[in-house]
Image (cartoon, rainbow, N blue to C red; front, side, top):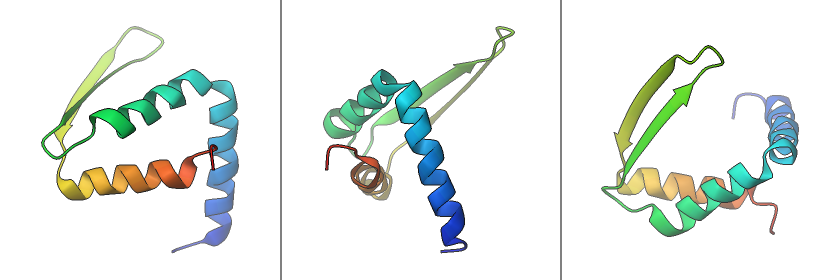
Length: 79
């Protein structure tokens, strides 16, 4: 761990993001809980305010899935 203070700052930023976008985070949590498995392809498109898009994807390994599930548990407000 590089800097525990940075982790606390990141936690505060995450909580503020969660307050602003609760439905989005519930959506992501649902995906992690129900659709993530080895071989799943995550396909993401981001569109900026000018209408320009960037697209990318990743085929998940079992290690990726374990990481996403652990991240979900760590960030969960349900616990």
